[in-house]
Amino acid sequence: MADFVERTISGLTIRIDRTLCISTGNCMKVAPDVFEFNGENICAFKADPADIERDRLIDACDVCPVDALIVMDETGTQLVP
Image (tube, rainbow, N blue to C red; front, side, top):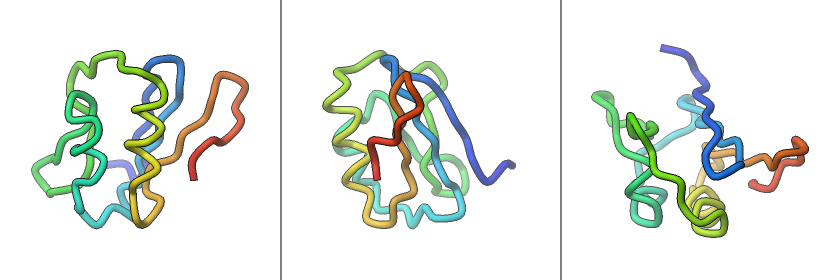
């Protein structure tokens, strides 16, 4: 499986760095409709993640203690971390 997984949700590009994830589940506590653990207990996108409020999605990525979640806006500007 790739080290990075990327998806656009609510107009934001979210990238998961699978090599950094330490499985705290903090992102899932904030956005359980977007993130889940895969079979290796690593953060993954749900199969069909719902569009959610941008601020909540940004917050869900920002709570990652190891910066495994990267958020970019429509212009490519990195918002998190």
